[in-house]
Image (cartoon, rainbow, N blue to C red):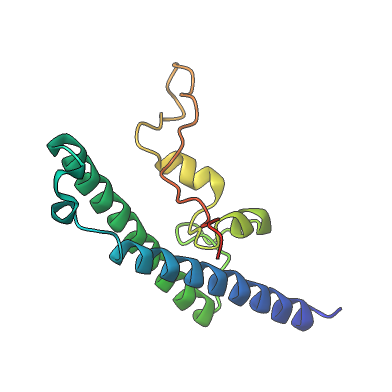
Length: 143
């Protein structure tokens, strides 16, 4: 296979990954708008549950909108020919990372360094345990 054929295959794979992520986000955003407002729940839940539902709904909405913005940036990078490279260093992002998160903008090392509380390399303290970032699970509901 020639380099041009490999590049086209990579572009086709990238387009498929981003199309899948776009469809998933659209489903999640549509499901989010169909959720009942806390005020509509009435006496079925107490005030604490209502406030918790409101905060959770806001957090999920913010996360989905951030993922949507990341999708738009990824599609722009794909069109510009820079998809699959770190926006910070230009280093290639491994296929495994892009398959796990098609919207990845940084290498694993860069993303870990950008985590809040990341230690400087010259610190004598041991590195903190890896933290789990907020991640939306794939929508596994029956269709």
